[in-house]
Image 1 (cartoon, rainbow, N blue to C red):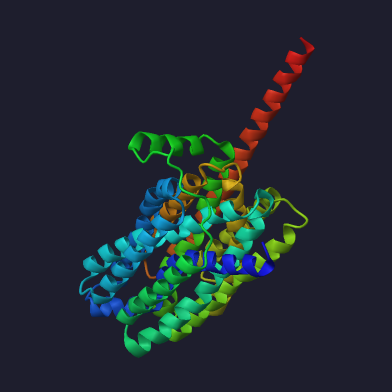
Image 2: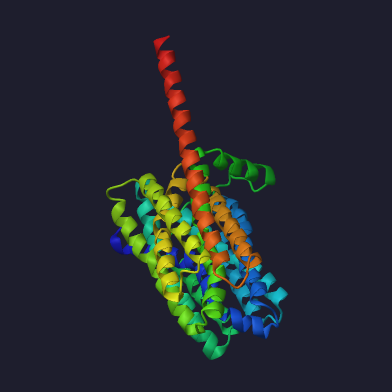
Length: 410
């Protein structure tokens, strides 16, 4: 594979994976306008984000077996077409309930890009290069939060929030053309993989029985759910509490997204000297410490707008280190079931993201506490799971080693 082909593939996979981040981030500045137009509250509008995350979670379990059975492209075409139709439905909606429903359908279509992108990384790159490929993929994905809310803020102010969903449909149509004409096929169809419920569940259980997958999917999934608390809570925090405009909120969101871009680049360098296991462990300790500082400061009212932005920037820097390494470590043990593993990993992450965003909405109290408390809890829980899981794996390995030594002596 030439460098030009490598970059082209990463860009297309990144575009597929950015469909959902764009769908989440681009309409955030429109929350107040949507609430006004649909005669509802921002807390109610936040549920359209929750329904989107639930749709991603459910949809990924659906696409995982399809990607293994029919190859990567056919299920991907299906998902992108569903997404385009649902996006137009969001643009035409006239009620909060209809928006929540259409966002769910939009997610079911868009998540095909996320699952396929991760599975194709495993297909197209050797195991020892997947962490670097995921880092570059994360870099492309990280650009979207810099662009999406900024564009969304100006588009909402100029043309109204409905136009955001029309733009998303057009962008996805262009991505669909790129997939059709440029992207390699990846793993071919496998007729031996059944789509009947029992074999599908059996494949999922096979994946779940792999300890490395379970540990890094749980720990990484919960830790990387922290930004969903920030995404759900930040429109209210900045636009209602700190009274910034839609355009200014877009720029704040873009600045904070830069935290992930810088750390993704750093991760690419660190992987030349350190293993993914080492990087993710240090990062989780660091995010836990910053998360606790966020909560303490919010409780005592230490933070103004700018000090909060600085601490959020420091916290979110960890996402560019945790996300690609957790993904690579989760998928490393698999070849045949990479699609199912990718679907389970992504589904869990989005399910946790949905619960996290819903928690921020339920705990809403016109302060910054719900957002930062949920962010900190994600970091602490991820660290605990990583520590307990790795300790259990080391104990099991040591016990097996002792048993093997004893059998040799006998």
